[in-house]
Image 1 (tube, rainbow, N blue to C red):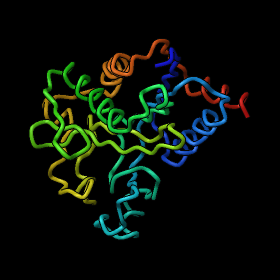
Image 2 (tube, helix red, strand yellow):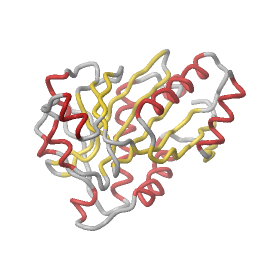
Image 3 (cartoon, one colour):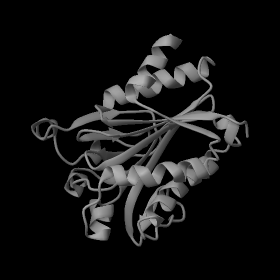
Image 4 (cartoon, helix red, strand yellow):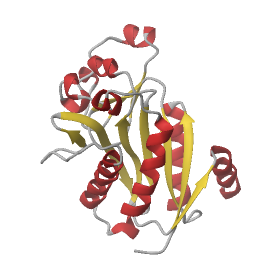
Length: 233
């Protein structure tokens, strides 16, 4: 593995379309070798449903009028997996990494993402596990984190979504990852106490750095990242 730097950026609450554009811009910079650093984007989305390559609109259980009335955006995207929900109180992570530096192994990459979540939850006293044949992270029979990635020229985008304090009722509007909505859970539900997203981020960043063996992590503001991208194009 090459010694490399990784920018870690907390975007806060950001529209899905804007975050997708940002991912694509970073990926383009890395593909064109204008940017050597890896990037981890951490954020929340407003209520949003995304449909992965294996998903379909049939897995959304309400019509377009109801979606609009509830202020829910819908996007068909290039990540793996089926349909999932993103919303406030859910910590989303988009690692944009050159996987050539991580063994060029997609399965290893997915397992490492799961391990980041498992290690983070351990810091809260939660024993989380994987389920054989499934991608994601589970606590007993409840799914607490979903993972869906896309890789172009061995550069990753999209990533993970960890339910912290989000309204799980939104999952009833879809078949999450092709499953029943009742399988979903969150940190707050499991711990039966209020959990701040910032506290989870503070635990997740060291886990990510350790598991991916990041040698030179550097936390940037959203503005600093945007300014850097402007200089590259």
